[in-house]
Image (cartoon, rainbow, N blue to C red; front, side, top):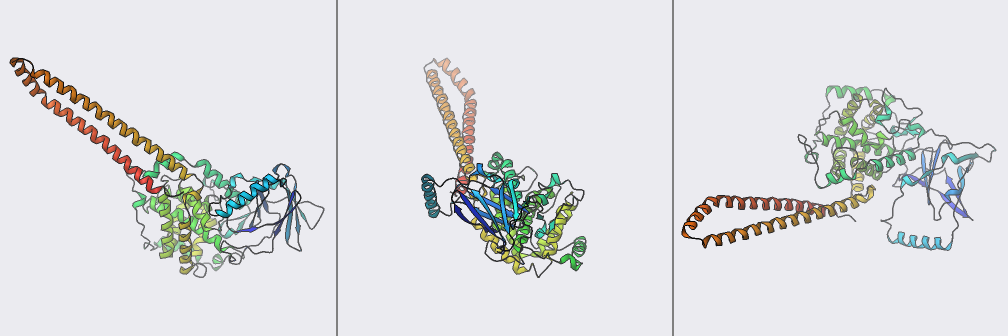
Length: 516
């Protein structure tokens, strides 16, 4: 959520006076206005969340964010009044803060010093810690006597151009999406719900299982070894007809009056990443699981979540690819992102073909709702050279590559580094146990050899007749001794093989755990 506006503030005793300036145009993460831009039109359409030091307000189409230097008094936040001045186009609200005592000043100074020394290591806000206070808020317009309650009527879909009750198309929305009523849930709440669901569904054991080596069931191809043919972009006759039907009418190709081009591009990347994963997973032969895979990996589809930051898109995809599908491997997730970059660089026709295939997959798997609100419009978007030229896609690929270089495991918020360290300790313990067992077996075999030597000495001291019998007996038992020695050698070889295998795994882990 990089497309945010900051909130101005001043302190008056134990209150923080906040000002939201609605005149400013929304900006993307690069500081450049996004297309025609989107502007706040309904001030009652808002959603407020607060945490000890953070306040987030989603106002109609724009996110406002404030980081406090003093702790909010959470217990005293009741019946928050928001005043809107139509002439100044500003919103004002006052929130209680705890006393700014000496200890807090000292702690704040120490924290400020630490943050200045290490800005890169500054911990991001945990959205799941936010408390929703919208129901405790009231809006007063131009000092009127009447207090208005906030509304919930938010946009969703391609370019956030849809508003109102969603069309179901005989789809069971409760099964195929986590947002069956996106109009009543703010984009900020959708993001919070998604992150909470992901934390609940993340399996530590499943991640560790696929960390050392991708666990590929018998009969399936290793997706890491599949090579995508990006030149395969020839449309079938049915695909050509479908493309014609979707783009033949000029009114269908029109964009909404207000849109954020960054939001559109981020949605495209979110959907395309899910497609790239499925193409690798199925070796480009879509199956009955493809509809689920493509939709579950895209937060744009499964949560109707709008993105305005490529970094947020990549993090979302990587988190979901390590939580939901069969193969949950960090390197595989990175490979899918690299596939997406290559597709953007090389051939927009391949992307268009994949979207047409995706549309057919959703159509036949009770996910028509995704076609109506996203896929159809993205097909039209890619078919519009004015909006989506080859240069535009190459620029998008360049930006995506830069984002990939800047994202590490720590950014995913799943505790992967701790998990890998834990796995390393378990593997080292297994190696020690295997080595100890090997030494014990070796000592047992040495004792057996000593006992055999003692028996031979006793045999030499007997009479000639007994010696003859002994020789015959010894001769007869010789193959058994050789068999025992052979068995011992085989056992040692198996133990060495196990240790060598674990050492190879250990070396692999050591080369992969490089992030701190």
